[in-house]
Length: 258
Length: 346
Image 1 (cartoon, rainbow over the protein chains, first blue to last red):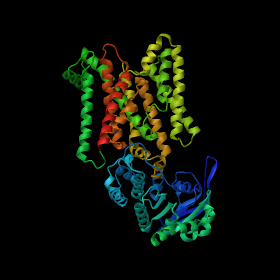
Image 2 (cartoon, rainbow over the protein chains, first blue to last red):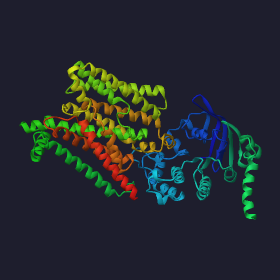
Image 3 (spheres, rainbow over the protein chains, first blue to last red):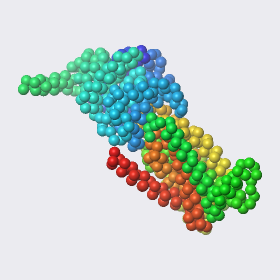
Image 4 (cartoon, rainbow over the protein chains, first blue to last red):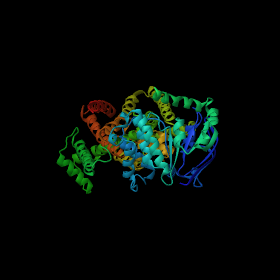
């Protein structure tokens, strides 16, 4: 991909407007962080982008409208890892990760995906799940499930990788690893990343751009530092977010002094 | 047990499945109220295939009575098990099977109507009961899917299950009403609703074979999509599965297939529910192996159950549904207990 363009996206479900008038654009190599308080419409936006929920407005990748694509074609371009665990059938970790290759398979005899083995191995390796590949996904802890879902998304290898709160349930070392993996991902040619993030420090540190939402409406879209300015964050959360973050950070300094 | 299993092992599993099916098939042909030697059975089959059918009483029993019956049992077992596995995968519900949408109950109602009214038109070798059951199955399928679509365009799992339950209750109320006014035909209806293969003909075999080929050709290619349904419908959609189309196509095929099965053999319970669970314990949850395993497992299971139904209290016939439920429950509990131990050791 070179450029993803969303113009005036709105989502209406069950008579409620969940999202209205959201516009942004994304070039290859960008990392867009979508932030906002609960109920701001972050996940709604992701579901609309992934083609799961109907939207109005224009959404185009390299000037091709996404609505015109077949589901598998679309899945090769945009892939979403969302929140939530696994169901009751005891697939192994490797089987679940391998399902990420579905959009590349031709017909049910699934020839024609020469990259499958390599993609599966790489994804298991990157997420530290290689040793657990034969475990049933039903026996995984919350954090391990999250890493398994991430491995599936990496194995999927869409051009625009979308992650809905990828750091949920992850312990710190894997959070660090997650951000490193995602950062390497966006730097490969023709790739971009969109993440919903609650961790505003991570958003400021890693994202190139940010979109701030509140109650379904866009507050700001700009380069990360600019969009996540003191005033924008205060408007979104009705509190002095920057001041709070600084105060939290201070506790570490005091530790060192003590 | 995973996709990395060596080709040789997979080959061995397929081969042993085929050998098992062949052995069970021959066993069911030989054993019965009139035992027939293996050698004679082979001879009659060879004669039938080469066009020189034996006209003695052994030939008549085998070709007119036993062979169509065993074939019907195998085909119905395979069809109901395949349907059960598909519905469980589609709805992510381990209690679902081909009768979840209520179409099978609709077929039962049709058969009861035919019995009570004495409807006796025939087409080829298909009885009036079978024809009426097929008609009611088709109407039920159209009614349930149409209503589901009208109520909830996304065809959510909850809507489907709820609608199936409600429709099933309505149909069984009507069935009870019919039974109340059925008089001396009560026994026939009751026997029929519990399932029986006592009156199948070569016409039934033809009907089942046709339905099985058409609808399993529709269902089997959805194996990979069904795997993704296990991740939840949204994730399946994100990975490029056309969720609603897959649901409509698979449910229509399942209902049609089960409707045909019920119209031939009556309401044979438990096979569609329990075979997929047993198969899952053997080959794992991946539908690429599960669906074929269900075909083999279901065919063998029902052939053996029918054998028990016609021989245990010979000359009296038991309803096959009684056998399937008793054996199925016992096997199911044994398999689960074994798996529980296995998990505890792991």
